[in-house]
Length: 195
Image (tube, rainbow, N blue to C red; front, side):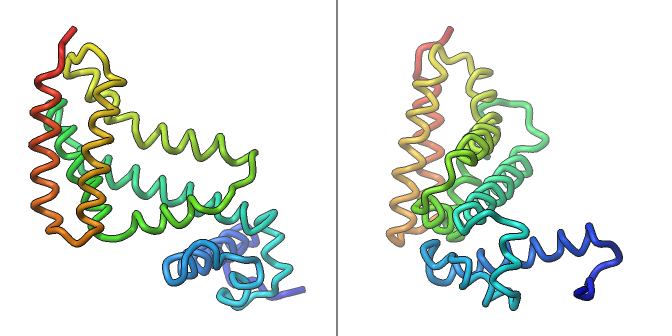
């Protein structure tokens, strides 16, 4: 029987699972999501290829877990940035700013890369739910602004942040792009019809 490297078998299994996740994340960051194969992850983690199947059904299942982990990270980052403010316009400003800082620090490229891999159908609902959790605070803040159509407002904000993301990725000054996007988005929200 192999020697466990944690105080309990449960902790050992979680340690191994995280070791595999970390190896897959490193591969994705270094060479893109397409490099996440069972063999590559096992080699990177220093484990036998067969041991991956104790934790993940396939490399696509592992990618789905990476997407969910990154969504959780991003959701926490946004929650921390908007914590403590009650004003919906200020929360929206902080949400947009932190979203674009996430773009500026390059982590969003991981998500883009991971989204190129087809995830198992059974995992798509989990990923959709993770995305909804991430967007919920923004939707709530938009509702509190009194805009008549929250869905239109959310779509317009998405367009503004997408445009700013493209400009940041192209090498434009991130802080200037963030300031411009926030100013434009908030002015636009204030101009939308209210309930």
